Amino acid sequence: MRDFIHIAVFGIVVAAIALFTQSGVMLNFVMLVLYAGLLSTSWNLLGGFAGQLSFGHALFFGMGAYTQSILQMSAGFNPWLALPLAILAGVAVALMVGGLTFRYGIRGSYFALVTLAFAEVFRILALSVPITGAGVGLMLPLRASVSNMQFASQQGYVLLILAFVLVALCVTAWLRHSRLGAYMQAVRDNEAAARAIGVNPVRVKLAAIALSATFMSAGGAFYVQVFHYIDPGIAFGSAISVEALVGAIVGGAGTLWGPMLGALALHTLSDLTRNLFGELPGINLVVYGAVLVLIVMFLPRGVAGSGVSVRDWFRRKEGNRG
Image (cartoon, rainbow, N blue to C red; front, side):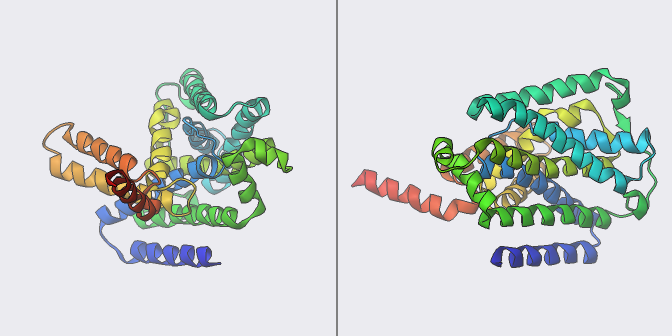
């Protein structure tokens, strides 16, 4: 119950910021942090809780983005009606990938490479078929209205992505205390032992990848509603997959708030380095990368587990001296 209270407080605070802040810069920052947090929370459900590391989460993002766009442009669907179908498309592809990998015992680095390969295959397919706009991509017409899921101000987009994030956080909180969540963590820690006590690893991992794809494809649908454009490089490119997994790992994989903390830390760092070193091309990326290396070295459990990690590091140092 405490987790859900914290989620409710978080939602109220962010909604208040969206409703009472007039700064476009602040609203854009909040929107992008929430968007990155949604992607990282999605990856966390599969990689953090179930221990199935994915390098190709852009596959689900792209399916959501393209389904949302195609249904509106080619089939005349209202965006609100297209949204659940976009999510279902992402889940269907996730179950296909999971069925082909988990059933044959593919896991670890092999599973990560398989997901990366699937994302690349879909990127090439999207470059080749007319319905996706091929290499040109698709551009949604701008018709600002709530009924069209296109808002006149950024406040509407912040509230929309906040709703997605709150649902994702509630699902994560539920998993922390549910039987399915316990099964997922058992499979993550020792799949053979989990099978020995009656857990079906294939079903558990399929449930994990379906939940993960649900929010990743919702993120793709949100992207096209905000930016009104999608192409194969954006939809299925590695940048989306990297953003999802880095945020979760930096913040703390397998935790409730870790992905959100990771998204906040990374976007704050990105903006600071861009503002401080913007006149020196590339230096902001160097600083950004160096800080990421330091986080991985000294906070291996992520920002959410930083207190324990730092204490452990100092204890090891003291032990070595003794």
